[in-house]
Structures are given as C-alpha cells and as structure tokens.
Image 1 (tube, rainbow, N blue to C red):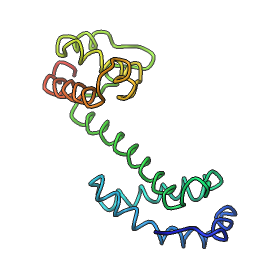
Image 2 (image 1 turned 60 degrees about the vertical axis):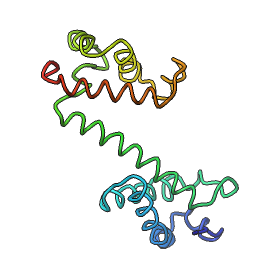
Image 3 (image 1 turned 30 degrees about the vertical axis):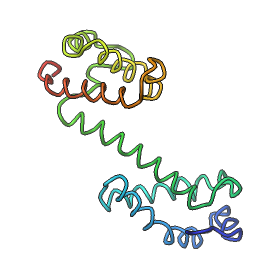
Length: 175
C-alpha cells in the first residue's frame, strides 16, 4: 500500500511535476489492474481513466485531499473508480445509441417528442414506461426510483433493462 508522506503532499500542493510523476508511477499500474479486474476494461481504457484520476485528483483537486479522512491511495482509487463508472455510463449510452435507438430521439430537453413517447406506451407495460420516464425525463437515479416506489434497487434495474430490451426489439418503430 502506497502512503503519501507529508513532504510529497506539500510538493503536490505546489504542483511539483517530479513528485506528481513519482506518485503516478507508483499507483497508475495498480489502478489499471484494479479497473481491469473489477470492470473488465481494456488496458488502454484503464490507462486513460487512471490518467484522468491523477489529473483531476492529484493535480487539480489535491487541496481537497484530507489525510485525516483517508489515505492518498484510497482517495485516488475513489476518483478512478468514479471516473470509471462515469465512463461506463457514457459507453453504455453510446452502445445503446449505436444500436439505432437514442433516448434523445424520444426525449429532447426542451420538448418531449410525444409521438415517439406514445409509441413506447404500446411497447412497454405501465411499470416499465413509468421507470423509463422517471429515469430519462425526470433524471432520477435508480436509487431514487427504488426509494420513490418502495421497491428494491435490483427490481428497478431489472425493469429498466427489460424495457431497454423491448425497445431494442421494436427499434424500427422508433426510427
């Protein structure tokens, strides 16, 4: 486990490039292995995410690091994990769009395409439609939907996944 000493922390606060490089070399490979093992990403993807974590964390947000709350390694791993989750969310949205279906075709931030949304009403059951609407129109997270309807997080994920599958199977209607 890598521990950042006070001297190196002070140098990082001053944006010392040599110290930044030293810390990056110490931790980047460990972060990449963690991301590969836990998120099944390619080495190139993990290197980019690890680099972003260091730029966003060790370089830009180092003043927010509190050694009394966590170790530096835990802090930078948390940033990398969050970056990875954001990356996967964007990647999922892109793969969904690559299949010819774009929620943005159905939902425009300024105007809901009622015709396409109406078509969804015929494809999805009431619960699926409601959860898709809550998630994409009202921008609620899965956790917020689960809490609002007093159901498990697993149930919400399952319902939204089933809705996605139905939409994919009927994508010719949406195009």
